[in-house]
Length: 144
Image 1 (cartoon, rainbow, N blue to C red):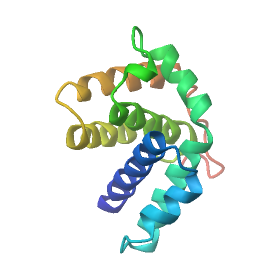
Image 2: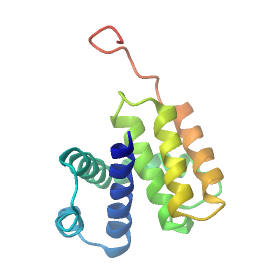
Image 3: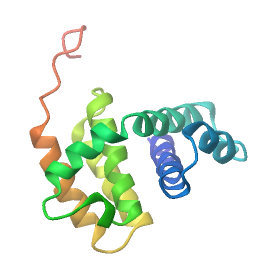
């Protein structure tokens, strides 16, 4: 489980670098992950989360705009904006991970990387988004 947290933290750092630096996702992956000594699984999950989030940022931002009442994305702290994007990507594209786990991880990451008011803000937005998403359907193995 700690390796997934590490992957999420790395993905957040890459998103922040991408968001603020204006580089391509490929450049960010190449330069950011090149100097990291990571387990193969940590590297793969971090890269998958980052590239998926960057690829779908416009769609994700649409959800966030709709559910972050009275907050424009441009006015959000960059860390908070990217924690939200990352968690939302995972909520939509990682149905095997329970929403409560994804949100809890996002809150812990916000607590570590952002300001004191961020946890409540991130929780409120993600909870609103989660309630608007369709429930995950059963898996092919009958939900087990």
